[in-house]
Length: 261
Image (tube, rainbow, N blue to C red; front, side, top):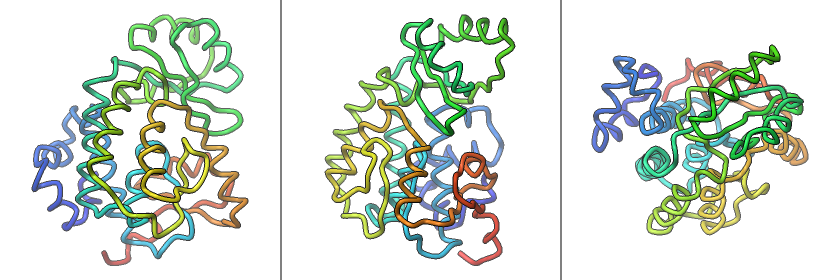
């Protein structure tokens, strides 16, 4: 990931979280820890966004909303970095250890009925969902899936995001956002928890605070973009992931990587 981080963005990280750069450059296993993963992804996203032209509408998937808000002018890149660091720190230290796994939608509701404290955390397509729960539940959930030959993918995530398990982290994040004010978005930016565009900074605080405790429905986000007249999407990441879930023609930011920063 380090090779995609621009020098100006690298300097931001070096000034306040130099250990992150070492982890990126050496592929340290710490990169799988929330405290490192989310700031690392943020650095890559804000670097790659400089490669494309101004967007008509910005959508962020989970922690991607923070880079989206920087692109919309709510914060500068340095402030955005400190805020995503706070989110990742609160998530790792205040939320119980958890897991997230992608499963067929047809199995998701059954699983949440069978296992207490398990939630449908993310809906990526009408056919695919991500379930999330407490780490000590995973062995039982995995056994159920294996016994029924259900195809699943365990995500490299250490907290049960987009579930009520994240409430303590959400409260701390809300307080942190309130003492780090931002501007009104200069570009339309959709917040998944609100299911609409952010109109002011109060919306940003509410959307991001709710965003880690409530279900993320990416299908609804795509539908909103289509209703706004969006006909093409560009995914801001080195390896296309969300394009697999896009209901619209989707390109990768890497298609523009030859452009200067």
